[in-house]
Length: 110
Length: 110
DNA sequence: CTGCATCCGCAAGGATACTG
DNA sequence: CAGTATCCTTGCGGATGCAG
Image (cartoon, each protein chain N blue to C red):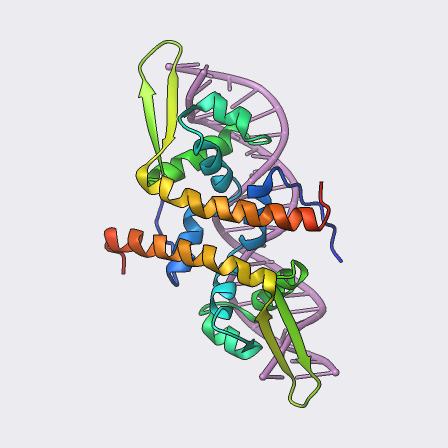
């Protein structure tokens, strides 16, 4: 358990801290499609390293945005899914995505 | 002009990059109330240093989310305001803020 | 398959002093 | 008032290897 020395200045600050970081948004976004296994997530989030994937998932889990379900099998199997709280964030991300889409098209970015 | 080596993996990625960073969200949020001068912003964003304020404002300006208006007077006067594009993000931040508010109240965070 | 351990570089951010 | 300039610290994130 690391020290939670986070200083939140306002609600907006708190909110951004939950979905900030390099991959949190993308992970939540792909999980919107339903339950995914670790390997599936890794393939979905292009460019992420196992370390960052695990680390980010743990943070999301600590914030209760995703749920982690472990199957005691061989080979191991772990599934990740959005929690109720996590699902509440999807509409926002969708909105941001739509905004970004427009911006990129206007600026002719591939 | 710094090198734009940003690699965007998807729309969500792009969107988060516009509003990521430590202060972008908070600055956009306080600017929602209307035009503000540099010093007013500095007082509104508790804890920010002049360096970070200027730097972040420049980035928001480059992304055309805020507009910078300079008055050639003595003493100097500079006003910052949301652009049309910037205003489009406000609903998103507003919802995120509301979500964060609920979360914090549930978890009894001061 | 699903991770954890370790080392490391770099860029984001902070502190302080100074300027037109 | 509205920034610059400079230096310094932190920790995010990358790379690689190992483990149950």
